[in-house]
Every structure is written in structure tokens, then in C-alpha cells.
Image: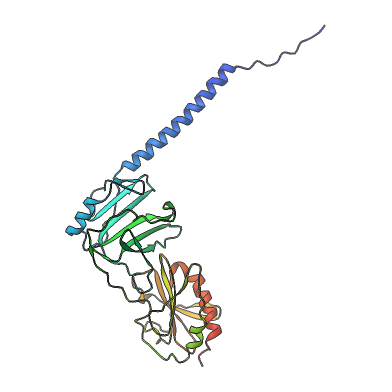
Length: 308
């Protein structure tokens, strides 16, 4: 007697229904996400009230009223109440946005070491956010009054600047005064043994930093766009804030004292190299301090002598 094996029957209708339902779920999720992000983009932008002494000026009010409805592909956004004076925003999503403030103070980073660039008829200074993992930066006008600040995520700009397309011709042209350069206001001391150190300074002291013209005597400096400069000055008096019991940082055999009381509103600190035959101070940005202080320590150890 012969038996016949029966192949399992495939329910094609059930499979088709299952695939259709799965496809509908995916489409629903995509549409739902798009609706959600569109709703987020339409929500008013909350901006905190920051120091802006000229934000209430007529010049700022006129500027805010004449700003474009679209900037770098982002539509103009409504500001959440209470909205600060002299402020505006453009946004496409919760993370894609540009904010503008008029009437702010010129930043402490605007010194003789500042790197500025001309964009659409105005001169701008870029200052990067030093918060870990942050890619935000703020551009400040340095030739207009009142001062305008524009903040955006640099990763979303493809190497450009968010101020492209902003017309500031209506604002008064006024060169803002520069702030004192780092270390220029320190008390001077014997600099007769400084030439070896200054002459040996390399063209770069940390990634992205290149030599620039020093703003004072017995000084060497490096700058980088968007960041505080790295500055070294030889022949300075000891820090008036240093005393017994102060915490020191030992780097490759040289102790350093960080004088936090000399902070001037920038993201840099003033450091003193101790135990050398010349007084040496360095202004180091917080984000670059580890690499820079290590390279500076090696430079100082090789080209200065220990104090006797």
C-alpha cells in the first residue's frame, strides 16, 4: 500500500494580511513621528533673560522687526512668554535652531588675540561653547552698536556661519573697544633670563593653535578660531594670591599654581610655573589646558633653569 506525504498548506491570505498590518504600523509610526516633530517645531522657543543692557533700545527693536522670516532653512519662531527684549529665533525642530540677541555686552574674548571675520558687511567674533560634547557657538558683532549675538549648532552649518544672510546695515557702525589681553595686566619682574624660552616657542602648542603676534613684552601667544588664546609671559612677579597651603598641580616635575581669582569672564585660567629662575605665567583655556600645560611644561623645563 502506498502512502502519500502531504505538504503543509500555506495560508497566503493570512500572510498578506500580516504584512499589510506591519506596513501600516510602520507608516503610522513614521507619520506620527513627523506630526510630533512638526508640533515641536511650532512650539514657542523659550529663551532665558540674559544681561543685555541695550536690548530695549530702539535700534534693537527695529532690527528684530526687520529680521528675515527664514534663516538657513529654519522658519522664524515665536518666543515663549515672558520673551526677553531684543531676542529672536528660527527653528525647524527641537535641536535645529538659531537664536539671536541684540544689545548684549561684547564678550571678554574680544582682545588683541581675537580672530574676526567679515560676513555680509559686518565683522564677527566666534566664541565656542566649552561644555563637554557641545558643538554650539556664538557669533558677536564687533563693529556695530548695539552688539548682536547669534548662537547655533556648528555641526548643522556645514562649515558656514549662521549670520550669513543677516542684514545689519541699519545698525550704527561702531568699533567696539577691545578688552585687555590675557596676562598684560600682571606685575612685571626681572625678564633678563627669558630670551631662551621665548625664542624656543614652537609654531603650535596645542591642536588647532598657531603662533600669533604677542600683545605685550616678553610674551608668546597662540590663537585658534572660536577659542581663548594660549598665552605665556616670562618675567612676571609672583601671584599675590599664592601662599602656603595652596593646592598645586605637578606636571612633569614642575609645580603649577592656578590663580582662579584672576578669572576675567573668559573660559581661561591664569597659571604660574613655580620653582624657575624667572617668573612665568600662562593663560590656558579650560578645554585645552591638559595638552597645553604639558607641552608648556616641557618647553619651560628645557629652556629655563631651576631657581637657586
